[in-house]
Image (cartoon, rainbow, N blue to C red):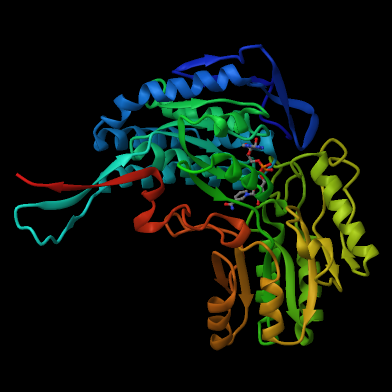
Length: 488
Ligand code: NAD
């Protein structure tokens, strides 16, 4: 079975509690990455009037939602979480049809989304100010915590539910209202998330959803939107940062070019399993996925052989297939990009160990499938080393020391995640101290997040100052603080 959707789902914008087409009636189609002839969803291609109406609705709902008691806000989030829990399988199957990941990964994402809503429901109850020492005993000095206003939420397609819940959850918990622009690859998942909140009874206008290719920049351009929380590519993040200017906040979680460093003392089998998971999970389409293996000479051949063997056993196919490890890529452009990254590496002197060309034959002809691909003899100047690949292609670069390995790992404008495989504690500690990445993993794959630990990149992988899931300071981005001197 390759699909869960009998007919395309018609998705609408959600504005002020109403489901609406775009003002001009324009639409766009989303195709199933495993069966490209199949249309999964048809969504409105919004224009300025639609975004204007969504922001106005969010602004109109703000006073009421900000005045809603935190335990009541928390109850809405908890109820939406329970609704998602009841719909795990149905939503997961639609997610597979819309963006291609395997059913197991999709189910986990729906569950994580519900967990995120519960996490932020708790944060609504923990919002707190502080009192300060003062030299005047007749005055109390304290901080008050307020929502910031209308928050724009702009998300990518690769985790279409959970990333949005990590933004909408804390925004609502703090008393903000939201204009949500899901990826134009995944409007249906955007609708399912907003739908769960509406079914939970969230008042109209508190979360508004606008779809379409130009909608994101229109949300950013509207000065009534006081903060933008964005996850996506560094290129788009740059544009958003420039457009916001002074006085409006940006939380930007961006792309990566993540390395796995393997030292001579690593256990080859362990290193191979770390690499396979880092590079090929989610078909390489995770922001935390690794495109680079930086490896010491004497362990190189053993590890590349083990990785190649393990990659050969990965089951590739439509995400609903039994035991599928790797689904399709998101679209034709992604497949073209993988082929071009491989070609340019080979032209520059790399050696192809396995994969390298789009998959053909049954069931691959209908969709956008690319195999796990391993390149050896990669050097730092090649495209695969310098850019985010965002697909199942990995390049092995040889080094002769830990100094060289760390220098190579850091030789990128990005700084999202980085892993090291070693049995030497001193090397692990040194890597943790010196590697320039927001998330460092020792003998663990570059991918994966914890529910509540700080997550986000440094350098060009994120704004850094406003990471997501920031432990005790997670709500800072979504709140503003005022200092009050209270005399009598
Ligand atoms: P993208 O940057 O192309 O799009 C992200 C979102 O921005 C989409 O909703 C898109 O419609 C919107 N958008 C496009 N142009 C815009 C503009 N000018 N103004 C405002 N919004 C605009 O990214 P994508 O292809 O959807 O996702 C893949 C990228 O996301 C990769 O680079 C990946 O590394 C990154 N990503 C990062 C993280 C993280 O946590 N750091 C997580 C997931 C994905």
